[in-house]
Image 1 (cartoon, helix red, strand yellow):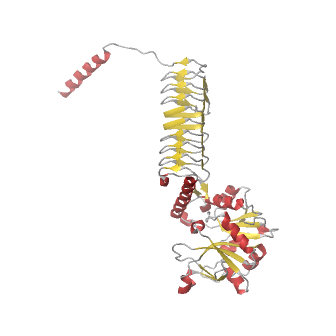
Image 2 (cartoon, rainbow, N blue to C red):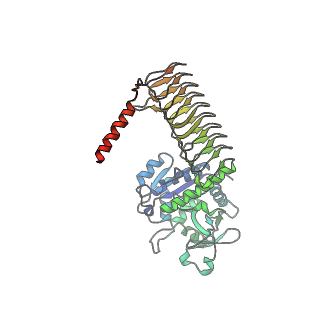
Image 3 (cartoon, rainbow, N blue to C red):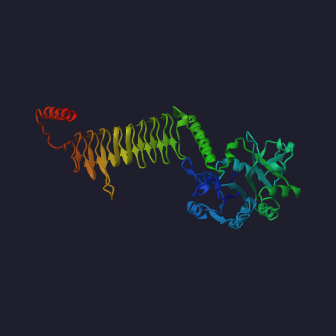
Length: 454
């Protein structure tokens, strides 16, 4: 791929997205925990564009806030079609003399290789004025058709409703994604009219105008139609999520990850899973998770913002929240929750435990029912547990508190003061024994119950 030539990306995102029935802008709806627009921007950024311009309209403030300084925006108001939208970007490209790649914010999966192939095709020997991205779906349905020769030179682009039966038999369809040299793009757009049923200016018309001038236009066809999937409704959003997850699962398994039931595992856009990791059924990875080699993530666990070290064991039914760190050989079992806590090498919290704002030393053992009481309703406080410490079951560690190395906290203790290295801390009420009291109680209550029945 030749990435030396300058190009600008124009991303169309001015539509109202009414079919989503949402207050959130359509292109900000997440796929794998990441807004669909960000999926597209990340791919564009990998090609190092000279400029990025996002055309906004409805929901402008949401988009501008989400984009920040990552791209310029320009306003299309009113929305008068795709050709008109690209025209609105011209001002944002002042001083740019390179190529222009037109993309869509609701078509987030176009590959970098595909984008680059389109830009390269612009500079082939026949110097096409416009390059179109085509695709061949299983059901071409009512897509517009691209009539081209074997070398990809376009003879005609035609909407389905205007196509002849012979043209409808063509399976090559128009994705809407296009590339042109900047000067050519805007010269052609100025000649596009709106003499159509919608009264709109269509980007596709620049191809037919260039053809009428006797210039060459070309098509690049993607081998994977899924990369030009458009998202306009909740159902299509769900389908795109399923598509992304299927690809991610395949990628994980190809990289040496064992997925016991792949269709039940859900990844985030940034999940990193090393080889020889085993993931059992019904595991969900939220954003910000890294899993090191040899770890086992057991069924029904949920991880987000967590780092899991080599040969660790998580779950089943565990929840690792942001800031959870498990060092090598550490273990959390069923119904254990960690938040902003580190579990040292070989340390264990096998069941029914909450570790929040905590630091647990290597080799420590945290008994069932233990909680770090880290919040007083106003502020968070830290618990530090030393190496090889043993925390008995059903203990409450009231932060801020420090448990020393090799210390023991007896089961059922509520610890509010530091425990020294090697010390035993037992915080319990004195046990009171009343011989025969239970027998007398039972006799009394049985007699009372018998009397009430008469």
